[in-house]
Length: 85
Length: 202
Image (cartoon, rainbow over all chains, first blue to last red; front, top):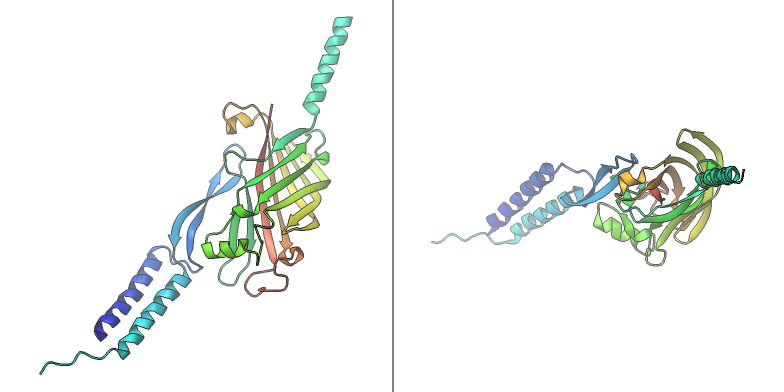
């Protein structure tokens, strides 16, 4: 059980970092929509269209690390599996 | 003689009609019109935009200095990439979008008017209203009148387009938006940009 908690914590840390890095390593806040610039050919104006897209930020990374830390901490209070005689 | 007089009068009337001020409507069916805003913050700048823009501007290509109008931005249409930031921004603690649903600028006077071709630049003095507080501001603007271009933008319509671009800064403390508070988290200065096109159908 102790080991299971630690494995989940490690997977959470690695998974969160990998996901964060794979989605652009955004060093700002998590975004759920991103602006896309669109140029109007007639007027030359640059418009902004918002597209739904999840971009994890440092708060996402922090939450994942906090969760992993909690799981790792809990693992210290879980009794080790007693060896069968 | 009578025919010649009638013809001259008709030409004069047509000329007057061509030179008459035109009213441009800034409700954009293409959704390109936008007002952008930027506030500095420690982790990253807060960048957003609003797209629900309306209003009218009366513009005379022969006398651009006489331009008058009012542009309105629906507060509720302000968008940010982060949903929590958007919720905070529209709440009663910041913009109070429910109580103050509109942000507007109404022009009063054009100064330093310079026209080259179809483009006019000027400093516009007008009343900027945000969160129920109205202040007089002078804003540099660029107006471009695109004759007979409406049809290229909106099919089956004939008319002219007026493009307005403006960039200026305001202070949120001037508009009672948490004056003197959270300045370590969100700057007092707000950079605003306006990129809009209005239509005057014929």
